[in-house]
Image 1 (cartoon, rainbow, N blue to C red):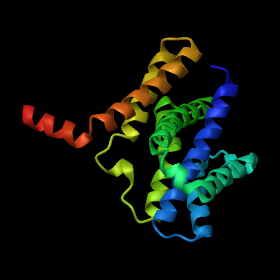
Image 2: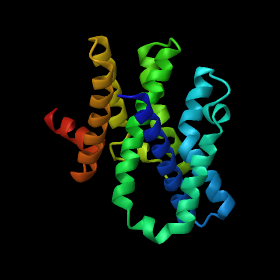
Image 3: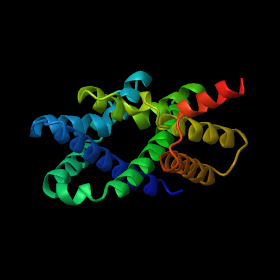
Image 4: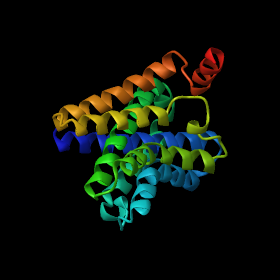
Length: 209
């Protein structure tokens, strides 16, 4: 896959996460500045945490200030078109799902390029994808999604494992990226559609035992 497309999807994911953060903040009665802060941490928090843990300084948005513009774009879209955006919840869910898939890949590849162990790369891929949402939920006094029943980080973890396995067998790199993104998207959509959860899996295991 051409890195240009990865970059485009990365930008779209950043904007969508900023929209998600802004909507969450406004729903919790934050003021305009507070909503902008939540938009920022939702969109860039996972990547920031990853870069800090890897010792890759300065962090992404400092090296590439245009990411602040992407965050502000998402924030502004909510302020200007809030009623319309509310009608696009399913579309936003799809972009959010694409976003976590792309950010998982970006986190994995960046960590591997820096020479870290694949297990660390897998961890950083998940952190890149989901921890912006964790920070958002903590700041808005919501139990983070990954600590609830919904399959969210697990989809990223499964996709990341698929990526590492295919890389180990020297699969075509572009096909590997596509397969990983598609797997994460499918798991996430099916989990929401059929209400899959780790609680359900746990109960099934207990029943069999």
